[in-house]
Image 1 (cartoon, one colour):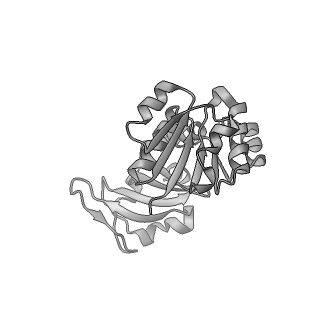
Image 2 (cartoon, rainbow, N blue to C red; image 1 turned 60 degrees about the vertical axis):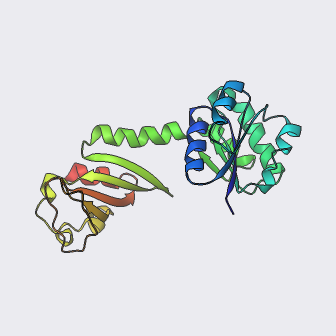
Image 3 (cartoon, one colour; image 1 turned 90 degrees about the horizontal axis):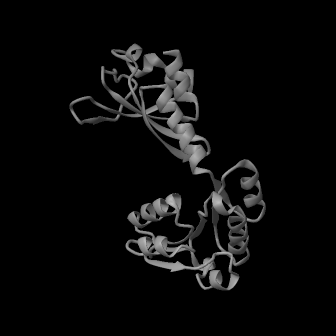
Length: 219
């Protein structure tokens, strides 16, 4: 049985998440007060509806309690609406409510009214993008949750020719190399402690936030 999600708010973030969920075979009911946004979303989501999500009667008809999760993705132009919508979803028995916040105070209020998880996509993306600006070797990052990231990083020159057991990356920086993509070969190597890094290798590592940046600074 497919998972079901309710996404409220079809700005850039809500639209992007809706597309990603559909691509992962999730049935998405998308809601927004803007008719044009709803029209665009209707081309790819399971169902799209146009109404004000602070209207309790209309929101009830989306059956939040039957959804695997509900995402309140209303943007920063309507903080009050996002708080009301989050509270209503919780009161209606939604199993899991995830809400988008725009600042720390907004995040605290959303948590108080029932959000199980609060996200700030602009802040989180800004943090990750800053690392890519500061450290050329960092090619991309993906959050796993609880402050843990998967990061793709070009092997630093100081690591070339050295085996992973020599580098002691877990002990020194808390960085674990999960895979190595060989330059020019397209091959992915699942490394052992004896795997020696080559020039142009891309390491796929798992580490806490800030650990890879620390590694890049010291090497």
